[in-house]
Figure 1 (tube, one colour):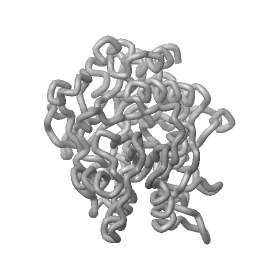
Figure 2: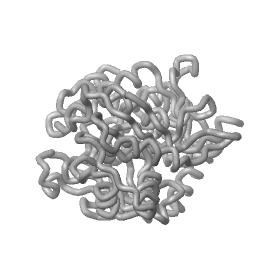
Figure 3: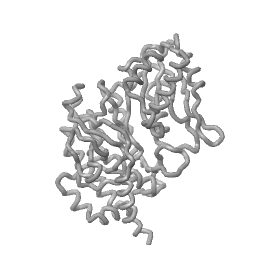
Figure 4: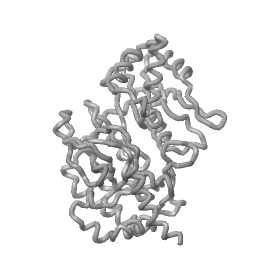
Length: 375
């Protein structure tokens, strides 16, 4: 994966203009590998009338590359390497093992991910030598939990030396349950403390915590340097999703953490690229990926500024064919000049989620094609 490794070694994570050719070469490299090593992926391409060699020479390669709906990864496993070479098999949210994606990561993919995190983290000043206390608004690690969001939340506690880790979701009697009182107790200890606190995890539980504290008239002033990192989406709480400005205001009122110290992350186990908000809270597309917004009915690419389904593209992963995946997110891709933060790449705005009828149809179609492998 010569070109892919070179792409993930680029020093500026947003230098898309000077890495366009490199990204294409890396994507072609990955496509040819997946086609040769994953029988399901080759069957999907062939069933759609594509052959990797000719496809890779197609104009507008990104748009022409067939996407795989994330729903298909939830229905069946697809690996491009022997499972013994996969150091980690991460799953999407949910710990029951039912209807979750399982993505395989070999050593090379993990090293590329590490380089990416270090480069993006340095750009956004996520790292610090000052120790801090972590409040994890997500799952406490458990042997039954292989979700990617649990691994990444723990990994984020390595951005600084961790003095303590307090988790909102604890495993007991075969399931996870939220422990708001335990977290509130830990937060109260931060009042008057010398070292900062960092919150990391689901925005839904973070918002619920802030609302509970507000309703109970619990307000603390956390030490200077305290931050909130939001990641993982609202999942089953989507209908109760709060406005960002409301959440930011609550954080300042209840914890004393101002908006400038709140950062959001976006990604998925099927697309493990780190998107980090800029100072204007926008997800700029990094060099490691490309985003295509597609019409909900025709699935054709739409113009910037138009709402549609979010198609995410990256050559990062070798162990599973996740080059181009179709999510059930609705989003808008904006031109770089519309932000004004100084990062010169387009930015992705997530509007919400869609009842994925089109995605289910695509997943069913791809699944029908690869059924031939089982005959």
